[in-house]
Image (cartoon, rainbow, N blue to C red; front, side, top):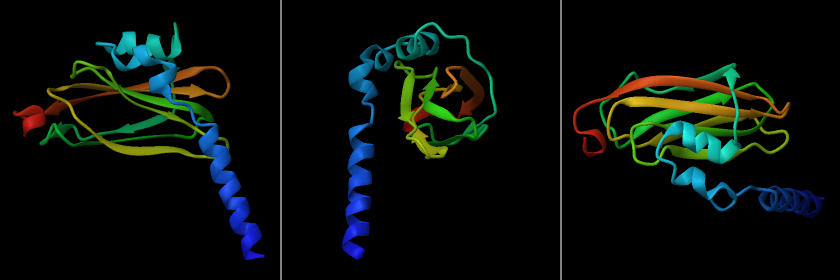
Length: 145
């Protein structure tokens, strides 16, 4: 019985990994875009995201611009979530494909050289796009602090 369960788990893991999207390969211009609107356009095309039920969190003041904790969570049935920032030369931070049956709840640490804004875009399974934007201050020293 254990062998069958382990085999099923392994098959599920292989299926999920085979269906993963490599956004760096599929949408390379999103990773070199110098501003958030250009990065969003390179990733998703011409979209007009609506305000959505997205919880985007980061400290209001980051004492260390080299390791800013950021979390994004939504109950919107999502196909993908992308995170952007406007303080560094490249705007795209991360893009997550959301496998079926997976909750959209991610945490990461990002670098920002100076104060700015973080934007999250949720691509809904309904074909609509949703956004949330927050601003934060980076203490003197930016990524060096």
